[in-house]
Length: 143
Image 1 (tube, helix red, strand yellow):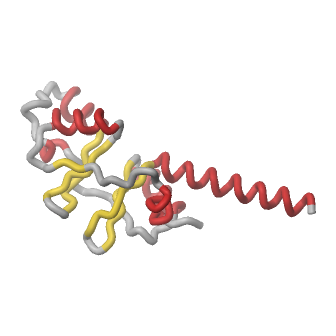
Image 2 (spheres, one colour; image 1 turned 30 degrees about the horizontal axis):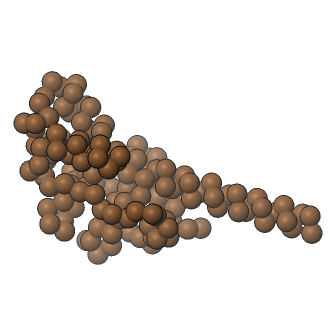
Image 3 (cartoon, one colour; image 1 turned 120 degrees about the horizontal axis):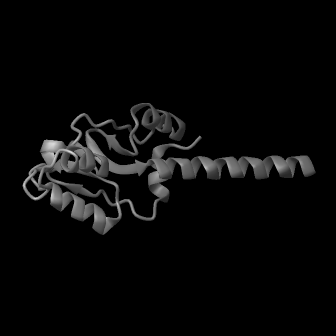
C-alpha cells in the first residue's frame, strides 16, 4: 500500500499554495481561480493556521451576504485543520477524509507542511493500484 509521501513524490506540481490569515477572502478566491484549486492553506510564516475552501466561501460569505473584499480569511477559514504525516497510508488518509467530509488534506511532518493531497489524488492512486493488481492476476491466470 502506498503512502501519501509517494503520492507527493509523483505529483506534477507539489507547490504549497497558501494565503495569510489577514488577506481578504476576495484575494483567496482569486488565487484559487488562478491556480484552479478548490482550497488554500492559511499560513502565518511556516505555521499552518487553517484552510479555506470554495465551500467556506459559499457558506460563510455568499449565503450570509458578506462582502468578500471586506471579509478576512481568518474570519471564515476552518481553523481545526485535519492533517496527516507523510508516512500515512493512502487508505487511512482516504478514510479520514471521508469521515470528516473534506477534500484536501495537508501533509505535515514535524510541524512543517510538506504538501497537500486531494481526494482526487488518493482515488487516482487507488485505481492505479487496483489496475496493476488486476493485470498481475490476469497474467498469473494466463500462466
